[in-house]
Image 1 (cartoon, helix red, strand yellow):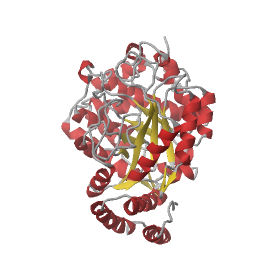
Image 2 (cartoon, rainbow, N blue to C red):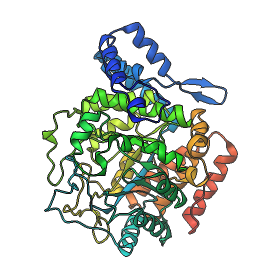
Image 3 (cartoon, rainbow, N blue to C red):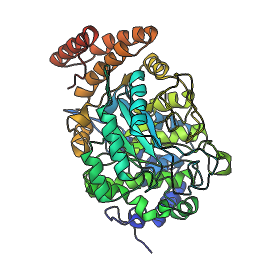
Image 4 (tube, one colour):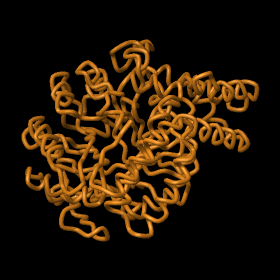
Length: 485
């Protein structure tokens, strides 16, 4: 039987079933052990230092105790600390992005995804490079600067060469004042050589959802195709890092397996990356199974309600305090609003989950024939930006850290001391100003410039504040763009 070892490169050793089961048993036995819970909460809380603040994070076992605790007053404490951590390291900034679906050709048989190979009635589509270009122009016309490209796994229709060509096309499009400045990539597990090619192409974060950490369930949910190989998929992040990609993004699809098992596995994966590579996940996503073309989420019997979902999010924030947390338009406005307070730092806006879903459509229209999942939050990007600001959040289109080389351990070292705020806050305001001048409705622009004026005054460094204010004036009065600290 495999033994638990977070430093191992073998999937069944760093995501160890026996360790997860022992953790869940321990959590159940101690879920009302108040002295233990108090000590865990105290450990999780941010501690002020001479240079900002720091956070210890939690082990998978400690975090699982908090998740198992069913005392309402403890849940509220967890929420309070999650918000405290979020504000300490990310402030009130929320990064904005959009998915871009390149192809829904796929050779896998994943039972929760409408792109599975046995689905014969969904139209199959793959964007040409000209269609990619038109999609990018449409996204730039909305105001997006950051994309996450998505594609089914098909070595014939979607080889790595196609993905690389699409990335090159995306970065080449300069339309009016628009540029896509960061391309994150969510494609199937691949080889170290291919990860090196993605790194050379200038990608931002490599994202791969585990779907489920429960090996038996994983193999049942992926009955055929290359994705059936649990170890190859689970070990992908180690290959990505070996290939030079130092920003990687984790995630499970909540609803496929028991959530407490998935939660423990997810935190163990983060611990493994930290133990082996010295840097944890750049992002953690928290999607839930949603309805799609021939997919009924009700057939999966592990669905979680909104309150449980919120608690999972908050506990992830306590366990992995420095990671970016992503919530997509799978969730409703109401759910997203609550999760923003509990740790989420990135949201998609105006999203389409169809192949070719942007070009040729108004913000109100959306094609459904090739959607990967139903979009719950169907507001336009402008509506999402205005909503965020009216909720006290700064919508950020910033990509400065990635383009200034502040990735991997360099990003984490800044984030862990709170120093990232010295550049992220003004960068967020400058990119927001770009959006307001170039793309926003008059109502959104009015709200935004009031917010910028208020937030500029909060920048403690007088020199930085002055430079940021002058750059924002230049954005308003000229076509100069892309200022960054």
